[in-house]
Each structure stands twice: as structure tokens, then as C-alpha cells.
Image (cartoon, rainbow, N blue to C red):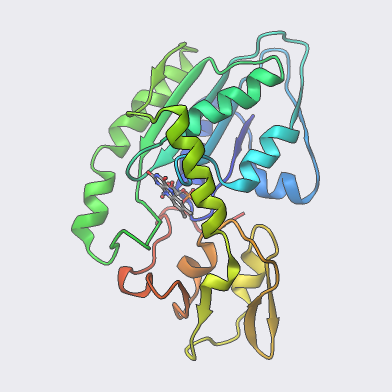
Length: 256
Ligand SMILES: Cc1cc2nc3c(=O)[nH]c(=O)nc-3n(C[C@H](O)[C@H](O)[C@H](O)COP(=O)(O)O)c2cc1C
């Protein structure tokens, strides 16, 4: 089984690419979390793959919470478990955090991978230019092939980019908590009241009131799915993201 968290499609793309070679089924952590399915049942020889994006050198809050609550049910004492962290600039401590969570459950990551893809944190990154997208993705296909080969051969290896020390990635998690305020989002008059943002939100943080999105929770994942998927690009974060454009993985059409 492969479980993934994906706001804008990169991790879902990776999950699908791996599953095409391993024949493992894929499951969205967002859906598993919403239906409170915390038990992951593995056949005796079944592998477990965990695919997540890097957020503030760590994990999206929902992924961290889900992995912490997750219970692995298997007759195999040592199932082959691997994790892939996608990232744009540095995977920080995202893989180490998954390993720490699994160790507390008596498991360990056999293999650790990171994969550079387009950085969807458009507070900082300009995704309006094709050359910027190409720079992020120039090594993605080759590295993904290497990762898939390693997984299918059940290798025990670490193919990660430079990671950060524990002090750095622990501090970055405080920064994530500070940024997660929904009051940072605004919507402009181009909004057509389609309701996609509310329907799409992984943590149901948005409702439509007087034909406009209202962020009803204090905190969200700041996954930017609402901002990147808005058909009229009406949603902005801290008035910093408009100039940098929208991005979702071009191979993905269903965001679950
Ligand atoms: C809130 C947020 C924080 C992010 N933080 C980091 C980061 O610390 N380091 C990094 O390299 N990429 C970071 N990214 C980029 C994502 O990890 C990357 O674009 C990922 O592939 C997105 O996966 P998805 O499309 O499956 O959601 C961040 C993106 C978001 C939305």
C-alpha cells in the first residue's frame, strides 16, 4: 500500500508512478483522515510507502497527525517501509520526522528518498515563468526512476538531498504554526462563488457565505490547494502570492 498526502498533485503523481511498477494500491491520507481510518492493513509480503510534501522543513500538519495516529496491522514483523518526501528547495527534516514517528511504533524506514519537484510555496517562488518550473523539475524524472528501481529491488538506502539538523527543523515547525493563520487569506471580486475551494479543502476550513469563501477555522494547513486551484485565481495569501502565479501538477486531474 502507498499512502500519500498531496495538496497540489506532486505527491499523488509520485504515488501513481510508483504504484504502476509495484502494483500497490494508493490511498490519500486526506481521505483516510476524514473517514478516521487509522488502521493500515498489510498483507504478509506487502510494502508500505509513505509519500508526503515538505512543509517548513517538516510535514504538513495533517500528515504528521495521521502518521502519529496510524496503526499498522500485519503478520510481518519487519515490513518493507519507505518514504518519499517531495520538495522544492530543501526537504529539511521531513524524512527524519517520519522515521521518528515510525520508531515510536516499533517500525523503521528501510529506505528514505527525497525528490525535487515544483515548489508550490508561491509566497517566495515565481511560478509564472516556464524556465523556473523547468529548473525545479530538471532532475525529477531521472531521480524518480532511480527511486522506483530502488523500491522494486527492496533496497535499504538513503537517497535524500541535504537535510537539516534537528534543531533547525524543530524551529521551522514553530514558523509553520505561526504561518497557519487563515486570516492571512483574502479573496477578491473576481470570485465567481463556484465553491471549489470549500469542497476541495483537506481540513474543511472554508465555507461559502454570501457567495464568498470564509475561512471558518483559525488554522489551516496552508497547503495552498484553494489558491492554486481557484478557477479565477481570486485567492491570495498575505498579499504576496498573486504575482507568482498558480501551479498544480499537470498530470493530475483529481485532487483527493
Ligand atoms: C506551506 C508550504 C510549505 C512548504 N515548505 C517547503 C520547504 O520547507 N522546503 C521545500 O523544499 N519545499 C517546501 N514546499 C514545497 C512543497 O514541498 C512541494 O512543492 C511539494 O512537491 C508539493 O507537493 P503536493 O503538490 O503533492 O502538495 C512547501 C509548500 C507549501 C505549500
